[in-house]
Amino acid sequence: MCAQVRRDIVRMVYGVQSGHPGGALGCTEYFVALYGNVMKYRRRPFRMEGKGEDMFFLSNGHLSAVWYSVLARSGFFPVPELSTFRKINTRLQGHPATHEGLPGIRIASGSLGQGMSVAIGAAMAKRLDGDDRFVFCLTGDGELQEGQCWEAIMYAAHNKVDNLIVTVDWNGQQIDGTNDQVLSLGDLPAKWKAFGWDVIRLKHGNDLALVIAALRKAKRRCKKGKPVVILMETEMGFGVDFMQGTHEWHGKAPNEAQFNEAMKQLPETSFGDYWI
Image (cartoon, rainbow, N blue to C red; front, side, top):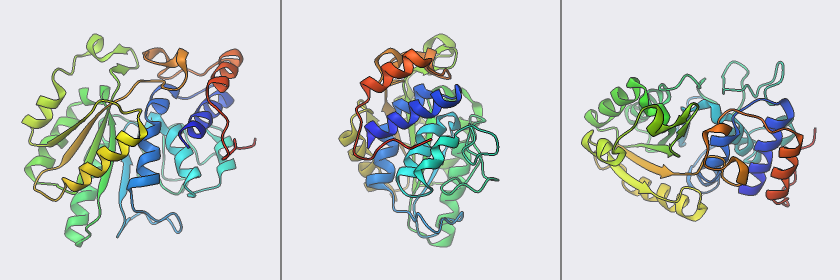
C-alpha cells in the first residue's frame, strides 16, 4: 500500500504539473498506518461530526496528495477520482477544502498553524459528548514556527486534553530551506515536555511497523491527564532518490524524465494505478 500511495502521489502531481510531493512522500507510512491499522472510523456514510469514531485533522494541508490517495484507497471515494487532482471544479483541491463535500475532509487547511487548534476543539467536544474516541492531528516541523501552534500546545496541556494525539512531521525541511537555516526550532522534545505534553520520539518515521507501534503506544498513553505528541522523524521525498532529503521538492512537479525515473523506483502493486 505504501508503494501504491507513493505512485499515486507522483502521478497526481505530474499530471497537473502542480503540487507538493516532498512532504507527501515523506508521510506516506503515517497515513497508511493511521487509516489502515490505528483509527476506528466510518467510510460511508461519512459524517462531519464524527461521533463514536476517531477523527483526523491535517494541519499542513499542502500534503493533500498523500491524504487523498489514502482516503480513496480506504474506500471514502472512488480511486479514479484521483485523476482530477487540482483540476477545475474538482473535489480534490490543492489544499483540502470542505465546500466540495469530499468524504473524509472536515476542515479546510493549508493556512499553516491552524489545524492543531481545530483538533483541540474537536477533542474537547468529544469529552463533553461522553465520546471515548480519539482525535489525531498531523502538523509540520516548519509549521511550528507559527505562534498559534504554541498557544494551542499550551492550551491543550492546561486543559488536560488527553484524548488528543498530535504528530509532528519532523523532516528538517521547509519551503525555503532547512529548519535550521530559516528559523531553528531548537530542542523540540524538551520544548513539548516543558509545555506539559507526553512526548514520544519516533526516529524512523518511514518504517511502517514502527509508525504503527508509535501510534498504538500513543493511544495507550492517552486518558492520563496529558495530550500526547509523536515527534516523527521522516525524510522528505522518501522513496524517490532524487527527491529525498531536500527542500527543493517541497512544492515542485517532476518533468517527464523525472516522472519516468520515479515510476521505475516505485514498484507496481496488485492495487493498480488509477486510470485517467
